[in-house]
Image 1 (tube, rainbow, N blue to C red):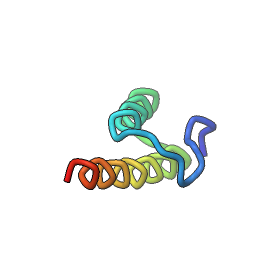
Image 2: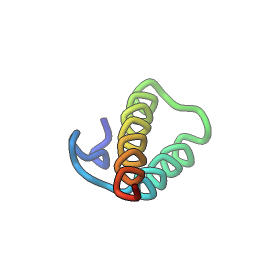
Image 3: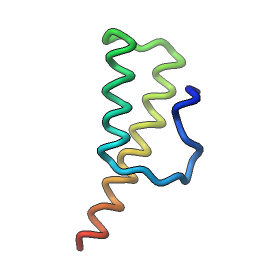
Image 4: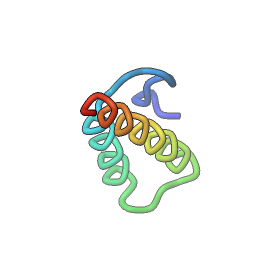
Length: 59
């Protein structure tokens, strides 16, 4: 896992996580290695949790 990925349970906004996902894809040139794919999957889960948290706060 990349050192840029915070430990599980840390709180970042969906926008912050989305920016990191975009940066990962740019660095990878559109094709993810196995390690990058694992990082991407963790980021997507974190992004989904952040989105859910933002929706709950808005409600």
